[in-house]
Image (cartoon, rainbow, N blue to C red; front, side, top):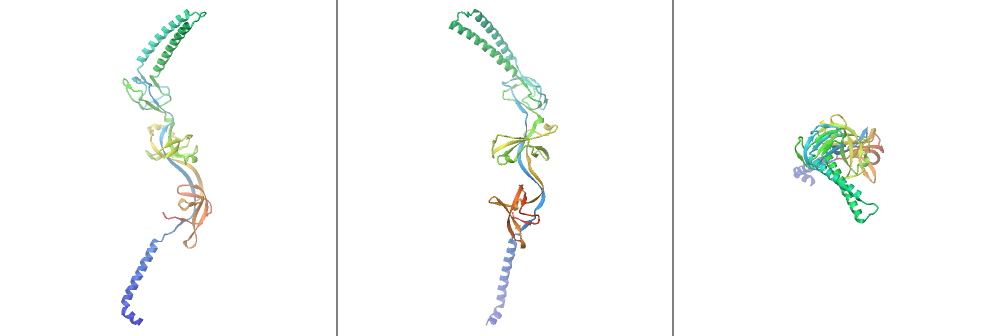
Amino acid sequence: MITSFLKNHWKKILIILIVVGGIGFLRYKKAQNNKIELVFEKPVFQNLTKILEVSGIIDAKEKANLRFSAGGKVVYLGAKEGDYVKKWQTIATIDQRTLQKQLQQNLNTYMKERWDFDDTTEDYDYDVETLDTRRSLDKTQWDLNNEVLDVEIYNIAITNTVLYAPFAGILVSSPTNVTGVNLLATESFEIVNPDTLVFKAAVDEADIAQVALEQKSNIFLDSYPDDPIASQVNYVAFKSSASSTGTVFVIEFPITGKDLLNKYRLGMNGDVEIILDTRENILTIPFEATRERDDKVFVDVRTQNDEYEEREIKIGLETEDYVEVLGGLSENDEVLIPEN
């Protein structure tokens, strides 16, 4: 009976077998395609450098904005924008004539008060002192003292009509390059000492403990990305500053060389790479191969038949790409690299 059924329906049975076989083959191919290919790597000996990268700008340790205490007409210019100036060189002077006249007037008033004071003291009878005579003498003395103060105040005002360079440097900005113009008290002359150029950067409080004086660094300015500046940490702020990213500490890196302001400008942006630590010929594995759990570090190590097992390891120096292996692995082991 079965034989008769097979003879009568063999074509249908064949078609069913082909369909089932095809479905099975397609499922097998899909499973093979979806199978994750395990990637293993052996630890390697290499040099490892840990770097902290932060952003900053070019600034100067010695810079000054000079302005007159009161506005006035410029009658003398000792330097123009871009000029090199010496220490105590006169930068600019405003009109002193009104102040000079007022000073002379105060000197005349002082002389009058001085004569009045002398007349009062000559007429004063020290043997017979009354309250009225004491008041008269005191008022005369106070009037004289006030005139002395007025003379000193206007003398100071005249002195403030002259701006001097507090240090040698370059006049990088000036509100005017000609005399005869009136300046406001808010307008200023800016002087920069090019020998004190620094790169200022802000380090987050979470990273500041890693930064120390004299750590070697490389500065990469946006304007000169292929021309790094070798420097080192020479200042770490003791007081924190607030920024849009949180609490930061300012650190500085000196920029040395000749004709610096002919190449670099204040306010230029860039990044600095601080070399925190360097170790040579150490055993390393990719950072992505590690994972942390309960304050311990683990990796998956290859076993037979492309299987793997978890193993605890000890690590040292860490960078973004690699970690130093202190124990738990040898150079003959193979660690699993997780799929990205």
